[in-house]
Amino acid sequence: MNHKVSALFAALSVSLLLPLSAVQAGDPQRGQELSQACAACHQADGNSINPEWPKLAGQHPKYSVKQLQDYKSGRRENALMAGQVAGLDEQDMHDLSAYFAEQQITSATADEDVVERGEQIYRGGVPSQNVAACIACHGPNGNGNPEAMFPAVAGQHAQYSADQLRYFRSGERANDNGRMMRAVAQNMTDADIEAVSQYMAGLQPN
Image (cartoon, rainbow, N blue to C red; front, top):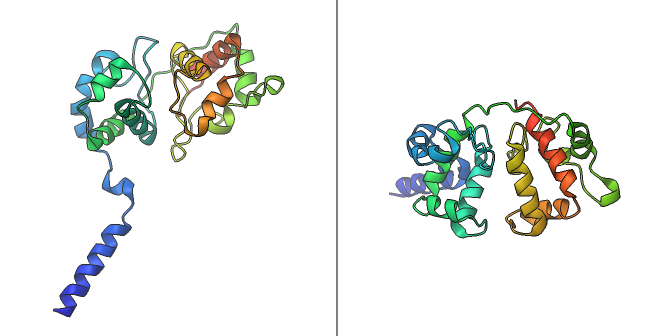
């Protein structure tokens, strides 16, 4: 009997040591099935056609899960998305995010008239305006940082990126950890936002 109890405690101990990511690992195949409801706006492969709607393809799953959670909780406000996520549970969110993470984001082109200015902001910030460089969090190629939940921005629609920066600047979007994006965007001009968004759109995702 004692041996059985010991074995039970050992098994429980091992299960408690399993990482959360292993317990909630997303199932891309199930995510593909669930994604049919997303395709109307984001397309079947996550590469939206409307520049106001984000490309989901290739995005880090942890980041995508957080956004879905924030839409459902109301921390990120969007009436359309709130309705879409209302029926999703945590596993659904992980599965959807895993599916879209496996898709290849389509490349985009940047407006050559502003891309040089955009590169300066992305790589060096705007010191005179206390605007930090984007490269510190999103990386030299715009691939982001999955563990820190900094999203990939390479190839994203310039209009979508610009809209989000303006929302952060106004406070309309406030689901950034530690007010990080709001602190960056609050000192950016419209011209800064347009230029860096165009530059990010032109970055080639890995």
